[in-house]
Length: 324
Length: 270
Image 1 (tube, rainbow over the protein chains, first blue to last red):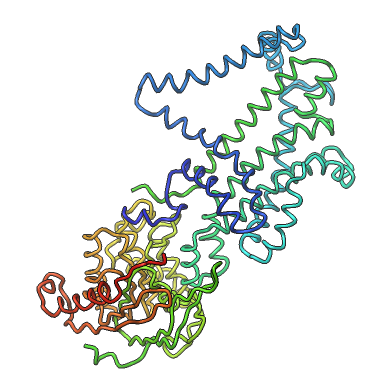
Image 2 (cartoon, one colour):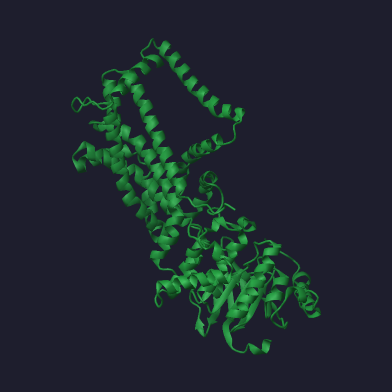
């Protein structure tokens, strides 16, 4: 109990507090670690806004207090109401060239009544489009994880490699993933692999960087234990590094998936085929603005669900010490 | 009592430790000479920042000295090893392993080459039983109290059957009652195992109660050994009886005198 004062940041604090504290701690601590580190600041910044999500169910679980219940429901409803109001005003102001919320809703009901129709490659239901986008993200992201996580471990573990790769990462990370699309088209000679390649490139950086930082930030105490016990490298990795790094790694995964979902829409607009990004572009060519707005909502909701699922996953694998 | 410790076990000769800092080299320890006999209990005491933990880390092999040499059983200490087990101040248990697994990790490392799985398990159980934690074996560190965590740390260190037990302010983070209880347990365990112990502490009573010799260190930077006090109280020692012993009070007075009169200027630099 008293010893909690001496715990490391990793031991102490609830998951939400941990992640936000971690992201807050990054700029200073990480910069001290290595030159490439300033990159983490902007990588990490999405975290605090996201952290509120796990806190919400906790608030809902509190005893029935009508004021807190109102506070949980009313502001979000007002926010949505504001959105609809502004949308309606814009719609009226532009003479319905931006369709009104009502028309869009009616259209959405129609679109979602048959999401899985298939009338040839250029006319498929919204369900197919979303699924093929998700498939590309999964493939590109999966390959990035297979490559990025081990590379991150190596970079974090060996100072030499860290110094070797940091300039490369710093140079390549800020490049828009779409800039890699032509290279992908050239090398893979196909739109689909090129899109996957783009996803691969954009999701690999957060995973490498977060894994490496996680490895570097494993509490020195744990490493001292490893040294005093004289553990083998395999034991160090499996018993100490991996569990200690897992929360960082999952943060990397979350950021990677988030970025991948942003990028896939743009990539598909350029490559065509079946996919939510292509759907948006196709509907623009058809001047079907209602469907574009529906697509925006679909993209947003899918992104939200992905993010939420990954936060849940990260919480499940985060070991906190303080429960006494 | 001191006459029985004739064999040199740990030998520290002319050790100096300098750290590189941004403001230039910082000399933490200077001209340290100390021998510890087999089975002896030595306490290192001094104000915070005097380099006592630095010295312990040197004996543990976690750091290497800038100058001088450290020997353990006539061998140069070149790195950490399981024959010199360390109990860390903040217990340093791995939060994702149960108490059993935390101890087992150490047992496995030392004895796996020569013993069967069942024997390793028995050793782990025995170590946990020694510190009275059999019921908590399957709990994770997050589910037990600070005192229990520290006991697991001690069990982990003892399970390796180390030649030397190094304790870095092991009870510093505990409340006074828990600390007293664990000190008594440690006294018993050390009496049974006949371990050689080097312990860093800032607690005068703890030092007098537990040790055969108290090494008092001067203030840093460039700290060194100021004085060595032999504590010739008979064992087994009982804290209640000792509280009224004139001899005990005299040792206590000597240490307090050193710490607060001669080395009173505390941490001006820090």
